[in-house]
Image (tube, rainbow, N blue to C red; front, side, top):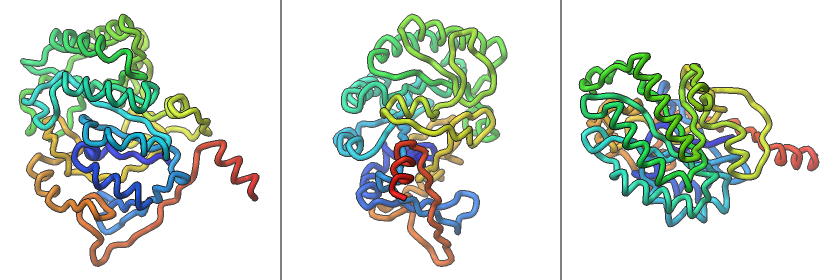
Length: 313
C-alpha cells in the first residue's frame, strides 16, 4: 500500500512531531471524513508500506529527520511552490525561502524523489499571465538541477471559491492555451520534464506529459523498485494516480491558502487544530465512544515483496 501524508493537510509543516511519532510506533488511525465514527488503522511498518508520499509547502520542519525516514521507507516528495504571495497563501514561506529548502531537501533525498508542484495556476488582477511567465521562468532556472519533474494544474472552480476568493478570474480556453504554452516552453528551455494534474485533456502539443502524479513509473524510478500495474484509482475526475491512502485530516491546515479544497475555511482549520495532540494515533483528537476501528487491508504492489512471500509459502 502507498501511504499519502499530505493530500488532506500540510502534515509536514504543521504536524511533523505527530508524523514522526506515528512512524516510530508503526501505526496511525484515520477518521473517515464522510462517516466520522468509522476509523481505519494503518500499519506503518516499513514492510507494510510500499512508499510514503509527501506533499508540503514547507519541508523545513522535517529536514533533520529525512535520512532516518528514507533509510526505512521508499519515498517521494511533492514540493508546492507557486507564484503567489501572502495575499493568497498567508502561511507559506516566500518563493526564495521555499527554493532554498527544496534545494536542501533534494540534497538529502536525491532529485529523483522530488517533484516541484506549481499549482493551482489561477488568474487575478495581480496574478496575470505575464506574472506567471516571469515567476515560473525564475523558479525553473533555479530549480531545474534539483527536481525530477514539475507538475501543475489549473484551478478548479469549487463552489466555496466564490466566497473565499472573489478576486478569482475564471480561466478561458484562450487563457489555458496561453498558460500551457508558456509553462511547456519554459520547462523545455530548462530541461524540466513537465506534466499536468487532474485532467483528461491532452496538452502534449505543448510538450506537457499527461496527468498522473502518483504513478508506478515515478515511484519505481525514484526508489529502484518494480511495482505491478494496478490501474488508476484517483479520487476525482481527471485524476490518474494509482491508489493510495491518506492518514491526515481535512480542515486542519493553517496555511490559509484562499484556493484550498481541503479546508472549509481558515477559521474551521484553526478550531480543529486545537484538537491536535502529537501523542494521539490520529491527527485530530482521539478515539471516541461509538467509534469503530477497522484494520486496513494493506496489499503490497512491490513485485519483489510478492516474490518473497510466494517463496516463503
